[in-house]
Length: 219
Image (cartoon, rainbow, N blue to C red; front, side, top):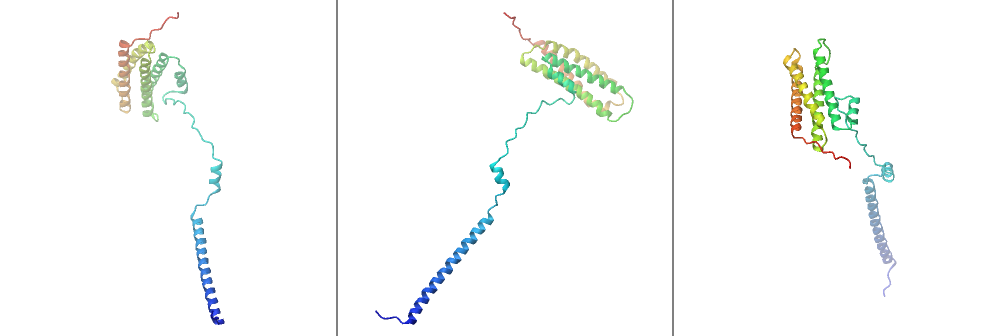
């Protein structure tokens, strides 16, 4: 085998060194790219906040909404609403609503007869008529409910017919008499008359077709 000269040996050694150096540079570049990519990924990822971590580990207990109490009619006082709620029978509740309707109608007649100018007079007169109509409508609804449930509502039906006709006479007189302020509550008055006519008509029809429940005598 031929002997290589020192120059050739250095040339070969230099070539190997250059190759090794080039490979090292390539590996270093790849490593830099990998580090850069990792840094970009870390920067792009949203940081985990202390709040998120805390909420994940110690979530707040669920909040349950409390049942809403039964809403009071806006045309009833607190005491009147309590009486309606505490009444034991449909007859009693209907009688209460009829008495409240009579109260609102009486107050309307008093306010309409006054000649003293005052603020919110239109609102007061219409409010009393609306309250009257609301009481009559609620009484009529209770009568229908009592019929559906088979309750004994003969007394309530009688009161609705008797009182209702008296209400109609008073309302018709108010409309007939007219007056300088009739225009400010005429529509509400017409609604009150219609509500009363419907309630009386339904009660009269129920009196003819209604069969009260049969109570069995104790053995």
